[in-house]
Length: 458
Ligand code: NAI
Image (tube, rainbow, N blue to C red; front, side):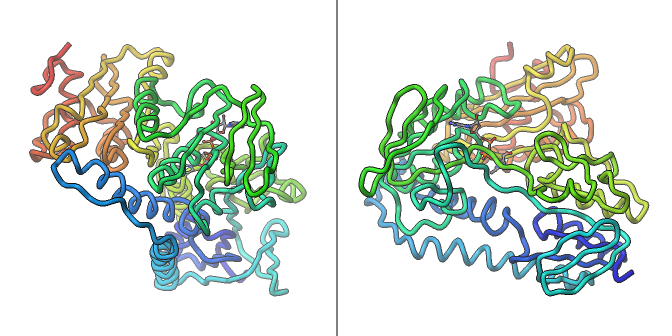
């Protein structure tokens, strides 16, 4: 055998698995047909967050009048903005390649086709053999009838991250995570954005309590984004250079670009022919050791069921490497945090209040508003709140949700608590520095215990 492990796909699942396997002394090859980093690094999380941060400055400058600081209308040099974003991606790609090399991983730039247990053929014409094959093939955006990515006016998230101009009117189809994150970015760039969401509420697939969703929706609407829930996009007609998007309900929306963000599907085409069992949505079925139904073939990341998140893929990569080295790495899928980069940000971990009740827990709920934090007021970010849900009997923290400025960073303290089975006291008692935003989580934990200092405890 050429390798102890061959990993196909160099995204945050595959490259992390490869680095960890290298660290653990396994002779490892990573096969990737494009640049390493996958969707997340090249055309997903990272470029989105670069644009989110850059355009956040426009939003903050727009609100700076409240401080008595007035900025003129910003001039946006789109090629420079895109080049800056591309520079960040390139830097990270180079970094990943160096880390692979430093950990003894052989990076093979080719398209790979698994031929069953032990064998992989490469687009270069070579064939390589490995004791174990790891599929980390990722996912791709789906189309719906009436909309095809082959039409230049219909954007995928990849197109939206590489615009040649800023559209005047953008219709976003899908009020899920991708749709709302890019709606936020384009609205800040001055585009009139309309979001069409099929279901009764935005972000319908997530376990987030209504009041947090309502807060996000209010923020997006206040920024001028037109959100139409219960609205199914049915097709579009071209009207010269622009399109008119039609809905099942009979409405029409003009758009110079249409962003289709109605979900992603696993890149599992052809795997069933190898005997690999898929579920009815096309996800690869794996056991608790991430093994597929074919001996010696494993799968991780967006290819397997569970949240389509980069950090879920990475965690599965680490878990698999540990497994190959006969070590243990616990991974509880119900405790994987999520951060959504809208304005305001939304982040969560563990159970919502609703789900905790459905699961039969008697619960304690603590909340604390951003408006109660001196730091948040000084930042001119008074909107939002922290929420902690705990088991009333044991005081163990079951979940947390944060909506407001920097929620994506603030959730990590709660994630550590939830994943380690910590109690409310573990967050309420330790001294937190003042004045900072994480004090909000401490106060929410204190509030759940009936003893927040800066809120009336009810
Ligand atoms: P999604 O599943 O989050 O949202 C798709 C939305 O489109 C749903 O709300 C659905 O009801 C709606 N929809 C479907 N057909 C429609 C129609 N005909 N008209 C109007 N609305 C329609 O999928 P999305 O946003 O494409 O994201 C894909 C995956 O990537 C998700 O699992 C997401 O969690 C993940 N992701 C996570 C990020 C984060 O955590 N920050 C960032 C980007 C993606």
